[in-house]
Every structure is written in structure tokens, then in C-alpha cells.
Image 1 (cartoon, rainbow, N blue to C red):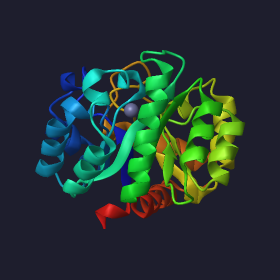
Image 2: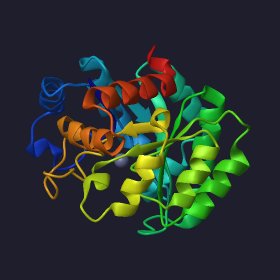
Image 3: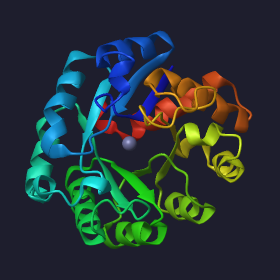
Image 4: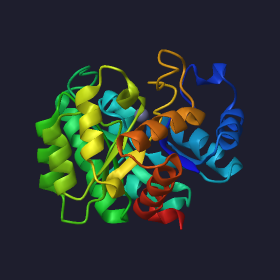
Length: 262
Ligand SMILES: [Zn+2]
């Protein structure tokens, strides 16, 4: 049974496929037993995300600010203490993020992205919750900030991993985990497939990032958690193990990392 370690059940366009409850049910029917729905704007999304987790078993959420939104006033006003208290206040909030740096879109000023990222890392260190990292065209700054802030206890996931071998090596060396999305199934993603193949099994997670980035054979369509099995099966084939073995390994990795659920 699979776990989708990163999706957005409340984001635009996913409603065309059904309500969050419909999507969860469809995923369950395909053998996806759990999922983590990710927060991008804590000032507005948390009530909705918590309601989804409360209405459904084995659906959890994170709390955090996407780098795209790091410059927004309402996000900047949330203090580190407020973030920590909010994260501790609810049993279904099991991770911090997604947070990080995005120099590809630069939707928020880079200073704001860095400040928000540091706040999120500090919240992880204070709560023991894992950090869900988004990084694009900002590998060196991402690793530098994570290393500067880390007191040695930081647990982190490089979500939707699509970086270089250098980034993979840096993250793995620090004990962090790589989460692979539908991108790894794309025909031309040969370098990424090589990285996924060489990532130790105990450091792999699988995700959809739904409604974005649907895996082959649904590329270009609106993504949903049920499709995580296609990426998971692709990863199993890369590792020359059965689909069941990959499902079991990524589930164990998820539960070990997000230990607030136990
Ligand atoms: Zn995401």
C-alpha cells in the first residue's frame, strides 16, 4: 500500500476531479492508503487543510509558507513562536513546509524567501517535525542555509526532487530524504532516473505533488493522489524490486520520518 508524501488536496483545478473526499476515496481504491496534504500559505490554508485531515483517516497536513508566498504580508507576520505553537496544537500537523527557495520564478524577494526558510527550519528544530523543502535554481543557497541553521537534528525531505547529483549527494550526506514525483517517469528525465536509481532505498519517498506534474501516462492532465502508484512502480523498476517492496519501503520511510503519526 502506497503513501503519497506530498499533494495539495485544496489547490485550484483539483476540484475538477472531485472533492477532497472523492480524491482520497479514489486513491484508497487504488491502494494508496495515506497522504500528506501540503500547506503553501499558512495564513489562509490551515483551516481548510485541518478540516480535510479531521474528516479522513490517514490524511495528514503540514504547515508552512511556499517560497512563492514568502513575501506576502500575512505570511511574514506569523512569528516563529506562533508557527511552533500552531504546529504543536494539532495532532494531524506532522511536518513543516513547504518552504525553501525558488530563484526560477522569483515570485517573492529572495531576502523574504531566505528569512521564511530560516524561520521554518527553526520551527523544525523546536518541534522535531520534518522540513519539506522546495528548491529550484537555488541549490547552493538552499544547502548553505540548511547547514547554517541545522543543529544536527534537522530532518528534511527534498520534495519533488529534480536537482543535480550534487544536491542529491549533499542531502543524502546530511541524512535527508529525497522524494520523487512524476517528473522521474518522464522520458527525457534520464539524469534524474540515474539519481533515483542510486539513492538508497531507505532514503526514498514517493509523491504526486497533485494537482501538478502528473506522471506518465497521465502527463499534462490534472494530477491526483491515486496516480502516485505509477511513480512508485517506476521507482521499483529502477531499483529492480517488486512494486510491493517499493510500496512497503516508502511507507516505512514515511512513518519513520513523520513519527508524529505513530
Ligand atoms: Zn507542493
